[in-house]
Amino acid sequence: MPERAAPAAPPAAVAAAANATAPGLILAFDYGQRRIGVACGDTVSRTAAPLTTVSAGGAGAHWAAIDTLVRDWKPAIVVVGLPYNIDGSESATTVAARGFAGELAKRYGLPVRLVDERYSSLEAGTRLRASRESGLRKRRVAKSDIDAAAACIVLERWFTEKT
Image 1 (cartoon, helix red, strand yellow):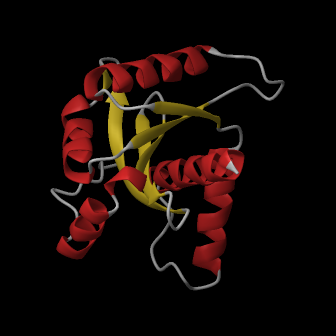
Image 2 (tube, rainbow, N blue to C red):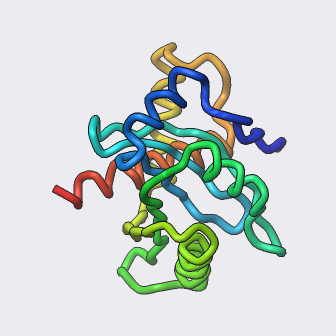
């Protein structure tokens, strides 16, 4: 499955809006062993949108792509989903996601918020398949689409928890 390239820069209108509302801009990450879904949103409109997927693997996250995202979008806050087990216990992936969150904070000096992401990928897949069945989405649902949509759900959950 080819990785979706991270946008080189936000479109001009979005970049102008991002600069005007920089304190409210958020990047959210759905951490996974193979791919990391990324979504963006803001605290003013409390909306989230899937952005891209970054590859991950044995060497960890593809930090050059994340560097580009952080530099171009200039988030004020970063949200990372924690993949707990069904019973609420932590797994090896939960520990890895915490490590990823810690590395984000260290590299970029940004506040990082953690959110329970249980079932976010399942919910994202269901939403995307329903969108395709209804005709709103024309192409098939790829794993990278699910990861980016799951990051969007993580951010939506953070908005909900925050109120």
